Length: 322
Image 1 (spheres, rainbow, N blue to C red):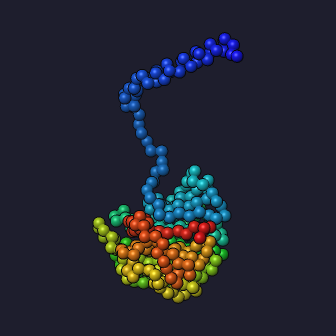
Image 2 (image 1 turned 30 degrees about the vertical axis):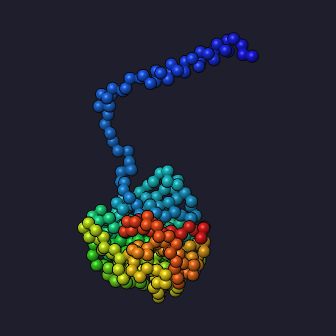
Image 3 (image 1 turned 90 degrees about the vertical axis):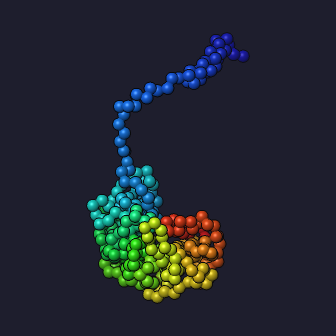
């Protein structure tokens, strides 16, 4: 049984709760003049906007790089809590389209310049490829100046000097520098190993990491005009190489005859399985191959997966779940 002093204390406490709530409800509003002397200032980040390029570092799970379309390359070593710009004053242009870290050497980073999501007058072209050998502290320009927009970079899993670049090319006109490029010496020299035509650029490239001589490429015939995008044509399609890019064959069985933008990725969990997303009407959607690209089946025709294809449409296979 409660003693009387304790009982009295409880009564006083609970009897005060409604009064406190009532006082809060009837509190007078803050006088607007209080804020008149306040001066607003930006506390950052000072360069915002979209990003179409990012990558992690498998050997350093808290380290990520991000390429922005107007602010160069950024890096975090604390899983995104803080970011530092690591490219200021070192890049000739500021728009990044692709970025990747060599899995065999985390100090080697490649950056491809030029946004590949062609947003009209807001899309800036790039000036080729940059390479860092000290985890992003310093950068060296290694060529492909006139590729204008680079959509993807893939690096051999055990050789950081063997690199492939998917050059989407200039969005506003013909560009013979489109296609798939290969360098065996870290960007000192480049060879164009797959070219379709001056209107069709490489929108993606994927590598079978269990057998890196097997490559898949996606091409997109396109042109950006003032207020519209011309997307699709005979230059769009999917390609495969089984010899490291020396020769290529076009993949067609089960795919739409006429395609727009395309993207492709091979599963690390099961390299027999390859995924692609295809802009086409009719017949577009997400496709899957279970025989390394020889034949394809439509697994989803959900329109939302390919809406605004020129901007959003990319596909990535889960590395652990086939």
